Length: 500
Image 1: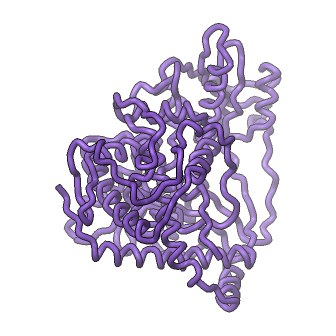
Image 2 (image 1 turned 180 degrees about the vertical axis):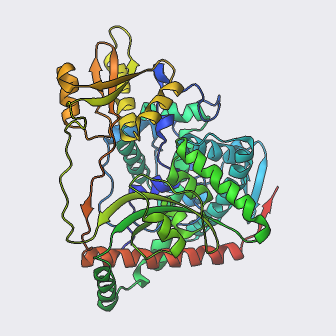
Image 3 (image 1 turned 180 degrees about the horizontal axis):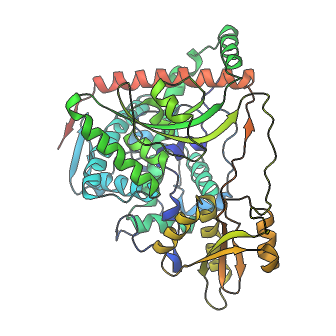
């Protein structure tokens, strides 16, 4: 069994592009995440594309198919022209100072700045000066780890082809409904570059290949192990299951408890303001799940510690917990999905009006396009509208978002009957559940998104136990991840690291 290099791993290391950072053109935010004047560079050379990334440890492989891939032409301008050798990672000509050396190989200040800017661009974070200090220190730690990983890749004669990097970039474009030009605009706004993004992806793949070459053939999952896991899943079938993400901040000294709690609460505030959970988990969380953007997978009721379980059972999909004090430190939980116990009877959700008179409380967000907009502008407006819809939480958030988007127009429409609205809006509402936003609609005024402000309907699903193949893949992932972490620990112990 081989390591499965899914594009979702790479998204975990960069962080999903934050919806707040996707709005360009006439609706750009008043306060972009960070100012930056650096222009996007030309297509990186082979050396540039192999520069280190921020991955602290390898993300374990993800079972199942990879993300859908956009047409290869989307990233043609990003692709280097030859296969990349991990030994070509350094770019001394871009250095304007040395941040650190790892076994006599340098990490430049330029490289560190680019990686910080890339993180800010893709995280949705609005960092304070104190945040930036912490981000700098942690990003440098990541780059030091990555330099060690790349040096090991060189010893194993690992190479990464441009096609592999292209596939990962295309996966990001597809999952975030972006064109390559929109991605470039996001990076320009933050002062980051395409080179930094490709470098991070390249190094992530190089490390995964290194781990695969060393350990994949040594991992053997026995039928008895799979049987034991299947019995464990069967025992939990009568309980609700939760798909959970977590950020863990350790308390190593009792005197630091208040400070760690303050940091955790600050992260909760950032997440509520639009920061991406996966990006913050990868940057800050101090447990192995950080490499997967904080995802700990599916757990059933009672499987986590008492403190965490008590918080989890009260949450609904999409909810974020306050900092929870449990063994070792503070946890922030995010509930992605919930499945009800096996055998639960579930009613189908409905799009019907919730008020007795047939009306629905509605709000409207307009992205004006101006007179006679060209197709590119219409496409940009629809992409922005889809991002707004995909990240819609409630009408209060809808209004707050409009206040950050220059040129957008928000209207509280109050209670309205669908029959009093245009045919286009009626059709969109027929496909929209309570508490959700419609797909974007192109009108003479621009791109419109209509939000239902009634209480969101929780869509329930019933627990379905995993198959033998899924369990086997999961066990393989766990073992290969543990071996990779052990390898990284041993390499770090033998490394000579000097911070300038």
